[in-house]
Length: 388
Ligand SMILES: *Cc1c(COP(=O)(O)O)cnc(C)c1O
Image (tube, rainbow, N blue to C red; front, side, top):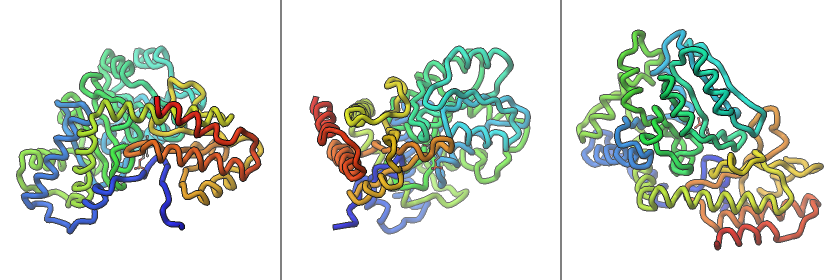
């Protein structure tokens, strides 16, 4: 039997059947009473998931990169200083976006698989006035998890706005946006939020909305301009019809279903589930004798794992065997290390069975590649943790 493959990449992921069903329902008018309720409810549910009762949510048609773009273009004016804290590919992308809008960009980075120290960040923030800084919560290219709370605190101390790229973390890694004082937190639908690709989701603090409202120059992108979308978000939340650009009716219907799942699971339970599955998966890989990126457990993401191929094993061949076992995994993304490692997404509605099936497929592929290890030790290690 083929065609019942398990998608275990860092987005898109496996989606709940109810979410997919909402996507396949007949498309309603974007100004019908029913859809206005769905949109309004989704905006309210976002505040719960982001833990940001005071934030301004935006639901946009687009991918995660639009969310990055939108946060940047609405807050940056030419010659603003922007600090990028980069832990991989998506930090580099953010630097390019900010440069495009005329910012003076400084990038802080480290060795692959490590984080930038708080001292280094504070030294830079105290050296000149930064308008904003960006943090990648989980860089999907390196699987490095950054603790955003102390960085947001530093940003506040130096009166700098903080933007968190949460595309690979929102609804998978702990985020308390208001409590931690982060100004913008965004994600995309296809990652831990659990909806097929096509929505960019942002939550913007009152402070950041005021910075936007006091800008002196026009936003350098017509579609992404908050000026056009703020009244739309406000109208839907007040359950009034409005129009600027046609919203993704079906995707937003699917989003409401998924957000309801997340809220009914309980956001704290959800973080714990991600942590347990990630721990089981990582320990299984170590038991197989494989090496992980990053090396340190306390900066390892809970939404995905990056694993080096064993020496003398060709990545393409290994992933082909995985495919033959009906599991889809992702190759490397970081240009300098692309051929040396692979990535496994374990977020959203991922469960213990998916995790065990994936570990088992990895073991089968290692056997096919003539890699020496104790058969079953990965599955056994994971089972112990999942049942604890
Ligand atoms: C996936 C991802 C993005 C880009 O999202 P797209 O939907 O592919 O545009 C940005 N940042 C991070 C951390 C991501 O994981």
